[in-house]
Amino acid sequence: VGLLGDLDTLVPILQESGVRHGGYGTEPRHYAMVGQSLMKTLSAGLGDKLTPEATKAWLAVYAVMQHVMLEAQDTPEGQRLFAAYQRRAHAPVLNDDGLPTYHLLEVVLESHNTRRMTFQGKLDLIPGGHMCVLDNGIIRNYTPYHVSASNPAFGGVPTFSIIVKKYTNGPLSTYMHSLEAGAVVTMTGPKAPHALPIAEDEEAPTHVVLVGGGTGIAPVYSMAHSICRGHGNRPPKTTLVVSFANCAEALLVPELKSLQNVTVVWNFSRETHEDEVRSKLGLGADALVVLKHLSASTLKGLLSEPISRVLLCGPAGYNKNARQVFGEGLGCESRFVKTL
Image (cartoon, rainbow, N blue to C red; front, side):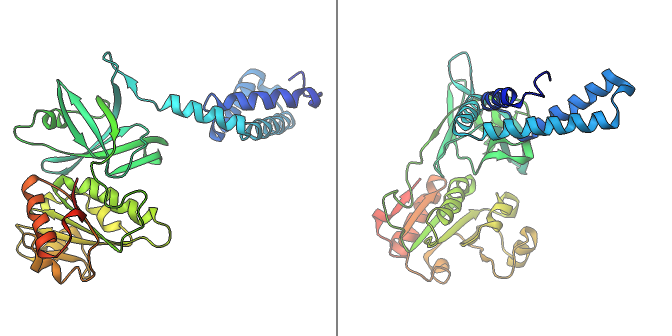
């Protein structure tokens, strides 16, 4: 305050402070909060002595201070310090064994035996890659279907979400289903996927088909979403085949329906009435619905264009059948039919 009449001295001090505040993780919204607190403090301390003219003057002074500090924080050094803070702040906390842990923010029931689980954490994840959950010596891989660097639903923190199906004799899935928001879970990763539909140095093929059964749709969904965003203005034609026993076990329905530039084939092995499926899931008349086990005959009429690449992700029996369908049935070269 004593330097308000000496801007030549004050401004460099404010600039240095602004750069330093980048290392504290300070954001523009924080300046507004401090300004409000300052005025409340002045009002409480000065009472009637804080006249309207004095209030206006203080607001003007604080606005100048905020402007100078934010400009300084936006310099390369301020941004470097801010990025370093973000890395520290969002790094997972290590447990007693030196393994990273992540806080569970939300649990949402997806179906009678499947939950969506959202964790706080920043992941540098290749679409289709997975996290390894550890508990009592048991390890199971889960693929995040959604990763956000700043999730507004959780105050702007980075998050990732997985789908967890509970198996009768599955100790780790039973453990995961016992958790509630606030729990801390040990995970390692992220790990790269075992296979990619398109190699990083490969030109985009003309038609990629991703096939997922059950919770196997999480990795193929994330890959489909990435393919159509990561190949410039000319992404390959992408078809996503998702298989479920019935509508009650359908997963990620809103996400699948919102995919753009992706043809989704909805496959239900135990449903018998197409109209009921469309009504239950809110599928339009143009949605492609197949009410049989996957076969070359049912897919030939739907997949009119030649297939360049196929990636499968599901239970072993499902993958074996799908490999036969796309290989022997639809004529894809075996080297281009991969299993995740």
